[in-house]
Length: 561
Image (cartoon, rainbow, N blue to C red; front, side):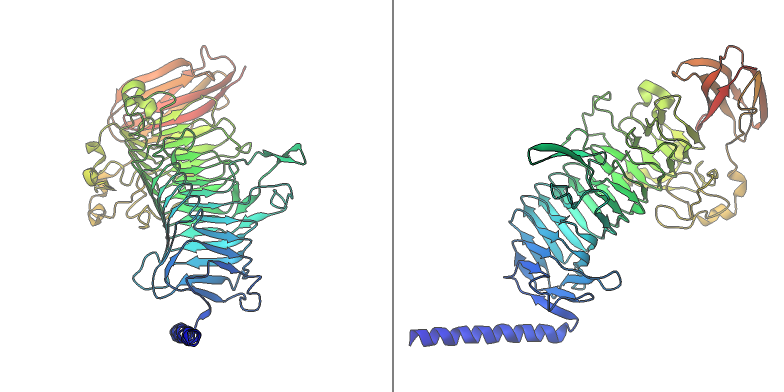
């Protein structure tokens, strides 16, 4: 009798479950497959007859210890979609949270319930919150929250092993898209995308050490994410050598563990070419943006606030220096260059921009707005934009630099509102940039709003600009050095539109000041100086032209007559 009662009760529960599933199917006819709470592994091989390109796999709400997605394959035009339905999916308590293993053309979304920003929430795992591995490609992750991981929030890479399937040339991770997600309180990086060993790593196979090259990534898009309170870098992207973008992310309080060489809001690592724009990076211990890439990328419209100031705050010397933007000397292709422009950098611990890349060529640093760099008291104007070697090929021009906030005329810096008042000296003062045009600001407002672009990340949209154009003349127009190369004499000409102290200095390739032909206060006007090469021996020199608020640099070549 007890056995019959047990069988009857089981049948009732099974019928009840079937009725629930049938009801859900009736509500969600787009769901090809329902995954109940008791199922943690979704394997395309196991479900080969039920999962096809274009299908949607629905996750019933509740708690899981982990979720593993394996061998699921869509197509470019018909990806397989995996989403929550009717509520929140929470994942916690396991070594990993969500693993994407050997999948392609897969979209994971937490958008399955209206009004719930992050329908999939992963927390309190011993390893990574999300991993994309084992030759997976063409993966999109959206509307997912990852919190309190002992390791990274998300990593995407397939480390080479002795079968050599994931080495460079045999496998490429393409079209990785991570957007509208929330990563916070991670033990290491918020995002760790691509291998850090672009130039090769050593593995041991059959007792023999072998150097292998990790695979590349192409088409990485990381945007509209919030990253907070990371132990290491907020976002790190390496080995992504083409068509990659990092934009419109908010990164706060990065690098809290102060692990050396893993301290930045955004790190564009070795082997990468990533445009990086419209990001807000604030109050971290690391540099705002670190650049170690191949060159050819553009860094613009970023707002960087107070980076590095809580990292050994009373020690502003190596190894405790932290900068708004730092360009290092790693893996850059010969003759490739960087454009760093239209950024607003506020109160970095050390330098506003520090440029140390010796390999790159034709670099441009115009139209940045830099306020209150921490080294100003000890190094002076060099703290705004520090070019570490005179031999570096970089044009620095038309930047607004000030050690104090009021002259820049921000709307309300006390509330981190660094938009510009219409009477700001940065308004309508941006210079043109050869080979680069920009039609929007950090808020995606049109550039220019009135007569020409504004300096920095923000484009003032005050309607009064149309009635007072006379207040917005350029401060300086600097001409080229002529002739260049130089044999006996050269001419420097420029126009200034506001009273300013003008300095012209010439440095040799070792960084030694060898000539200062001009140091004078001047009224608005057109000026031209013809200067004898004098004591200058044949070689490469750097001419620095400086006003009260702007610094330009030009390379000079002196030859024998």
